Length: 256
Ligand SMILES: NC(=O)c1ccc[n+]([C@@H]2O[C@H](COP(=O)([O-])OP(=O)(O)OC[C@H]3O[C@@H](n4cnc5c(N)ncnc54)[C@H](O)[C@@H]3O)[C@@H](O)[C@H]2O)c1
Image (cartoon, rainbow, N blue to C red; front, side, top):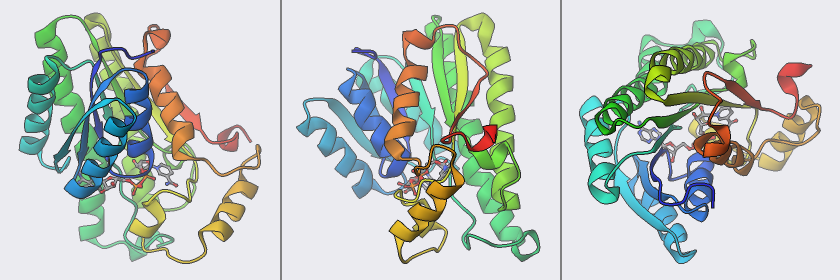
């Protein structure tokens, strides 16, 4: 049990990386607040955790709204007595995946920054405040992207992930004297989460997976579970001396 008794929050827990991470956190003994803008999806993940013998509380929260993030963290503290780990995982693609820079509207830009960067900013800000009140450190994990490490297309989305990476490093340095660690997981293409559909891509997911796999030196698409394994490690004491890291989970893509 790598996370025995830890009070944790996972955002975007209704699907993909968030759902897989919430399940893995709980399997390692954590108590998990499963937050998602879609209550039914959060409830489904919480039910799966409870069925497996774990502890989970579902909650509907919009990470782009600071008051909702404050309430989310307050609920975790109320339910679990304290906050040990927050996984700021929510991220949305451009509404029309494949759009060129000049095809993005001002609304696209504002929405992507409000959710992808705003969610990480509010989640980190209020987790740090809670960790400092508790006085014994804490862990922040953010979901970045290889799109924030190398130019990959999707310029506005990529810029939001670059911002997430820089926030992660800055929070790591500010938080270090207080025992607060902050790291980011940077996945490459995960065709089997809800991300492609959220970007308006439908159709043959297996064909997309094949194309994605061909881009990765290890020859496989990335899965939500790959990211969840990295999240468990970063959340645990085994990563006690690791902070400020942008960890690609990318089958070797950025090393190429
Ligand atoms: N899938 C990929 O190819 C890929 C690649 C690199 C990085 N990522 C990143 O991985 C993370 C997880 O994405 P995923 O692939 O699991 O996608 P997903 O669509 O399966 O899951 C995202 C979840 O976030 C929730 N959500 C959306 N907006 C929200 C909001 N404002 N407040 C609260 N919840 C909200 C959705 O309801 C959904 O359940 C994101 O940060 C994404 O940018 C994905």
